[in-house]
Image (cartoon, rainbow, N blue to C red; front, side, top):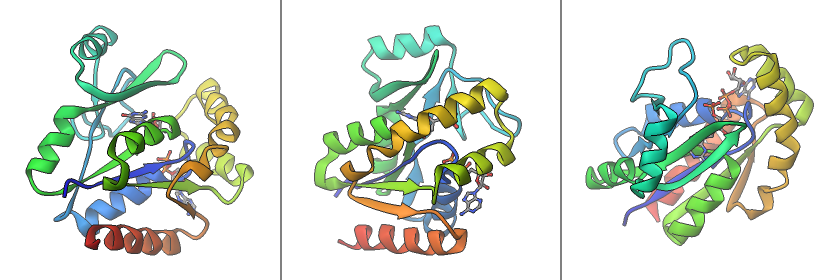
Length: 188
Ligand code: ADP
Ligand code: 5GP
């Protein structure tokens, strides 16, 4: 069966950390859906690895061409979208797809895939801890950081709509828990 695992959460909750870990330990069975975005790469990010970094005009052309399963303006003026081409490539390699998308995108994917998908909401222990983690990550300039924190409470209100919620408190416990959850889903 063509399976998908969706990880969603407010920015700074730990999605990237968890997804990278799962790919390290379960990479034979899982592959990451590289999204498209109009944001600029951060230091250390590579085009085609973290994201397909696109000009807005190219992103808009992909919208016209129905190349996306879903896309969202996650932050003001910045678009992110899941490409059908990524999903097909991974399924054709007989692997399950793993997504790191925002909360609305995650629910949109779950609606499309139904029982074939497991939608996991990764929750920070508190908004204060989330702020602290985002600030320490220091990848955003001040106004972007504020925008992400301001959005967190809104995003947290979506958690009941997910199949499962994992509270990311102690990291090693979270990683073990997520490994178990994904393994159980793949074994079903
Ligand atoms: P997201 O992809 O959801 O925005 P990241 O995976 O980038 O989040 O995590 C945000 C920051 O918090 C990173 O610097 C990461 O190293 C750190 N982090 C993630 N999980 C934990 C945890 N359980 N305890 C402490 N720091 C964490
Ligand atoms: P960042 O800029 O920190 O990499 O990501 C910002 C937010 O965009 C994160 O919540 C991330 O999960 C989300 N995101 C990344 N790719 C996609 C996508 O393809 N679709 C949607 N809806 N959100 C995405």
